[in-house]
Image (tube, rainbow, N blue to C red; front, side):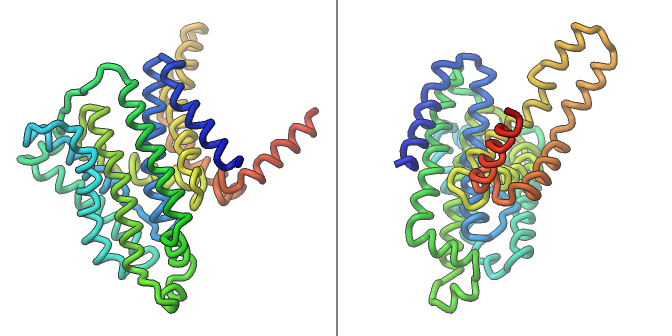
Length: 335
């Protein structure tokens, strides 16, 4: 029963969040967290459960984002139609890619996904008559308030987590895990590994493509550097999965919250604390400190990943029992 009550209580808290916290800044941060829950869940399905490391999540994210933007800019159709179509187009891209590249294994498949990401980034940059190149595409936001975007993002995030939970508890999930553990053994048992890896990839691409389409509608502007970014999208998706817990249903949710929080703490200089401290003290050195701290989030990501690999190899959710015992031990020692 605990397995049902805890997620349900968390969902209720998330539903009430924008009604209690009315500050648009914190609502924006939570929208980003929810988007990363969806992206991380998609990455976790193909990489965590099926064992096919995806370095090109930005390819599907960018395709979904540009689907929504091009519907408006070229066809004068509402960008909100990009939500279902963005996921569909991402699947249409994933299908032939997987059919060709799933003959590859290990690092070779990972490099192929990285190449896919770069191919689409260059296409979006060079094909200016379609994508406007580096100028980007502007999409007017439908809502002034962030609350509608929040609930749409919440629905996408919750749907992604539920989908992962249902799939991994079904026969599909057992096939995915068997492929991850030993592909040759799975094939010897009669499992069509290419077929089931295709299903996993298409589900992942659909979820990530939906997140890309929602990003376009929410942010109102995209360009190739943003939506096909290796660091800001593809690597971030991997970090969300690793930190939260690979092969866990709720790991991406935890990882998304941690990564967005750390990124924002550094970007904003401790939510503006360093700026206020500089004004209060009048020390010129504080301006320099604030500048370097705001640019140090990449370093913090690296240190966090090293810490997780050394002490929490299964991520925060995967090693939650170990982490809780450690915290309780420290509490008793300091009491």
